[in-house]
Structures are given as structure tokens and as C-alpha cells.
Image (cartoon, rainbow, N blue to C red; front, side):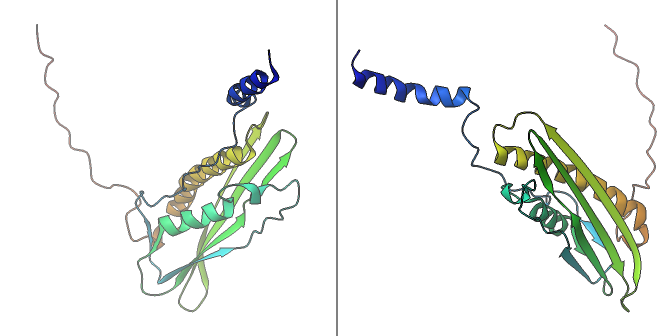
Length: 195
């Protein structure tokens, strides 16, 4: 065989070799949005989002390598889910924790948020706190892909946990009912058709 055919054969086998080694690095990541869900309507005049957690960007912290950093995802979650439906007071959505930490083949992620309600005279009247965590262990084929998947999973969990905590701890600050209060009507079931 000539050296030309080897390089041609190598070029043809390159995509297969890449696939066998775990594939190419993922490059397309869908936005993480929650605006398709009903909003959480708060009886306040305004809502602020405060990011108190800052990723260090120094190993073992890999938060800044995520295609959508967890802090950005939490901000979008708050913007999509929370709405001010009052005339006075304010709500403050605090991003307290959102690291992604990698040590070898283990990546630990956590999120913690605090929603505070302040009256018109700036007195804290109520609060709700939510936390989630996730651990990935094993070989990481695509770091950005793994971080995206972890962030998405934690945000989905946070969305559920956050709404649960708000509805549990801030009932009097919601402008919509916390649960359906309409009774279910009963109707007799017909007999099954006979053959």
C-alpha cells in the first residue's frame, strides 16, 4: 500500500475513532427556560434578584466552564417564575450558592436560594428558602455537556422545590390560591358493555 492510501484511510476512519473515544465535544445547548409554567404571583410591588454567590473559577470550581452557569440559570428561573402583582413592598430573590466542583471523576453541584418579602417600610416580613444538590461520578466524556446536564437537572429540581417552599411559607403573600378548592363531583359509573 502506498502512503497516500494510508492517510486517506486514516482520514476516513477519523470520525469513527472519535466516536469510539467518546465523541466530539457538545456545542449546542438549549436555553433553560421556565416561562411555559404558570407564574408565581406575589403580592409585592417589585422583585429584585441579588446574586450573592460568585464562582471562584479556580480548581476545583468548574462553574464558569458550564455553557449556562448555574447562577445564570437561577436568575432566569426567578425571572420566568416570579411576578409582582401588588402595589407595595418588594421581594428579593437571593442566589446564595451555585457551585459546580470537580475532583477527578466526581462533580458535585449545589444550589441554594432565599426569597425574602419586605414590607413598604423595608421590614422583612417573610421568607422561603430552597436547596438542591446533585453528584455525578464516573468518566466525564464531555465536561461542558456534563455540566450543562447537571445544571439543567438541578434547575428542574430547584423549580419544584422552590415553588413548594414558596407555597408552604409565603401563602399570605401569594395572589393565587395555593391549591384547588373546588370539590370533585361524583358521578355513577355505567355498567361495562356486554358482549
